[in-house]
Each structure stands twice: as C-alpha cells, then as structure tokens.
Length: 210
Image (tube, rainbow, N blue to C red; front, side, top):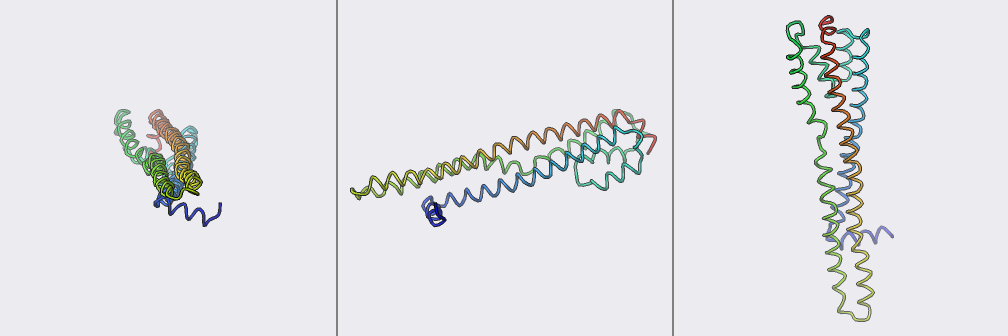
C-alpha cells in the first residue's frame, strides 16, 4: 500500500485518519513522558527507602544532600517534611499528620496527563467507526454504475474498514500502557506509604540528627 493510496484513504475518511494519527502521537507522548517520570521516581524512591533503612548512614547533611539531588520528585517531599519538621517539639501523631498531608498533596502529580491517554482510548474506536461510515457512504455512491459498481463497493468497504482497524489498534496500545502506568503509580504510592512508616518508626533517630 503506497503513501499516495494512504493519503487518498485519509482524505476519503473525512479527515478522521488524520485525527487518529494525532491521537496516536498524543498517546505516545503521554506514555513516554509518564513512563520515564514514574520509572525515575520509582528508582529514587528505592534509594530513599534504602537510605532510611541504613540507620548508620542517616545524618542531616546526608538527607539534605539526597533531597537536593532529587528534589524534583514528589517522594522526596516526605524527606523534606522529616528534615524541616521541629521533631523535638512534635509527637508521632503530629509528624504522621504532616507526612500524610505531604503525601496527599503529591499523589495527584503521579497521574498527571493520564486523562489524555484515557480519552484517546475511548475516542479512537469511535473516530474509526465514524471514518468507516463515511467511507461506506463513498463506496455506495458508485452503485449507479451497474457494471463496475459491485466491485467498487466491495473494495470501498474494505478500505473503509481501515479506519475502524486503526482506531482499535490505537485503543489496544493505549489500554496496555494505561494499565501499565496505573500499576507503576500504585507501586510508587506504596513506596511513599512505606517511606512514611519508616520515617515514623525512626522518629527518634531523626530527632537526634536534627
């Protein structure tokens, strides 16, 4: 199938194939950006957990240096609370409240832009069906020519179904990565909950270095 033929099909679909190409590029942009961000955040979260697990390596300078290096990641907001809180004057409940507040503030940043991917998953098959309907209109418009009408109709229907197939492919790609990203978000949230508990369990140690 040549580029000229694809260009003709795109024009005959009422422009829906162009819209689906845009949706595909939008979905890939969101997938790549979120995948890299969450992968890096998970890696930083593991380092933060290892840092808190190694009690002998915990000191105020180490925590501040670690936080400055990775300050753009929400998981480090919990360490920031542990560093900045007046631990000598707060009990476990107050520290837990501060950590929970920081966690709730940062969690919405994890699924930023995922609504776009969810929209693409829903919209792509509908656009594909719309393009197929328009293609069928074009195919049946040649029935006035009795001799070649049937052949053109069957060929036109086959070409029109390309729009539906394209929409389904985009939706399947989107669903796979949407579920994968949601799984990674749950892992990161679990990391943040784990780090919160570790900080609470090491409150006395943090007091000694503040």
